[in-house]
Amino acid sequence: MDDVLYLGSVVGVLVLLAHKWWAYREAPPERRPALLPICLACVTAAPAFLFLAPTVGVSVDSLTGIPNLSVMLVYTSGVAFVAANQAMLLYWRHPPERAWRTTRRVLAASAVVLATMIALFVLGDADEEHHGDFPAAYADAPYLAELLVLYHVAYLVGLLNVVRLCWLWAGETPPDQPWLGRGLRINAIGVLVGSGYAVLVLVGVIGSRLGANLDAWAVAAPKALTLAVPIVVVGASIAAWGPRLTDLRERAGRQRDAVRDHRRLRPLWHALRAVDLAMRHVPGTLRERFDPEHRLFWRVIEINDWLHRLRPGHDAEVARAVDRRAAGLSPDERWAAHEAARIKAALRARDRGDEPADATPAGEDGSPAAEHAFAGERTRLVLVARAFTGPVVDAALADVGSAVGTRR
Image (cartoon, rainbow, N blue to C red):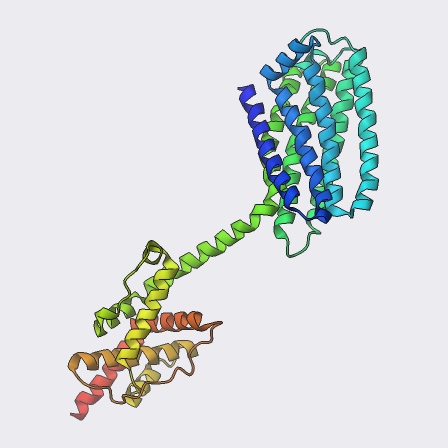
């Protein structure tokens, strides 16, 4: 099971490396310095997880004849990983010249830590294989205990600095790059989870020195790293693919609105289709048949074609009846009620074989404004369709019918 966890983490890191290497090759020269450190961070993280896998680590120790060499390789990769992460953030934040000045100090400090670790490992007596429980087995051993404390303190301090920088700079990202800020925060969370590895080992080692039996903490600690990998992979790459999520959300919103308006237009469409069934559009593609926005487009076109054929005119008596019934409505709703009443009156006259009282089509003045023609038609017809099935229009037409009957 441990092999699966660690080798799976290797795969995740390599996927991120491939993504960033492609971005590095495609980037203009001035942006490449900001991408190179994250590629190096991936290059350093992959061997660490590879050597953490028991099958790989024990095999390396056996082939070289040096017990626990794989553990030192993991620690070496860890120091390089922390340095690369700090360099990555410095190059993201600052111009290359300034970033390099600070990066040199980070690299010098990392080199000192790494050299000291190697010296302590050589001086220590790690002649028994303890790949899976190295911190627990050597928590009290001379030199090796100091090695454990030095590495994990340096690792923890470096990662906490990465968390600090990520969170600090996430709030300073440009307004037009929201996904960069989100990526920095996600990366900070992932790195914070990964730093739990160092905390657990230090608690186990120090606890053992104080007489407490906390070996299990140190043995289980590397699992925290596998939990951090997917979070860091998402955080480090989301600035590239996150905007697509925004596009998908916006498209889903448009699709949802199209379905809603398509349904709202159905009563009006159903009433008008008797004007000329031959004018219905026959979908020519699967997209026209199933895409909500295409279906809505053609429903609007069909309704307008039928209205043009119907030519609903202006009837002053109907208009006065609507005004009486629509007194409490908003201007847009009152306008829609007038349009719906004209249409319904024209349909009833057509069913009776009569001509409208005034065959001159009413103008479109007063219709709600829209950004472009189709959006305007869509907004206009949805308002009309809602009024078409509402109580105001039927009541107004009933008033007109009663008045005509009384006059007769």
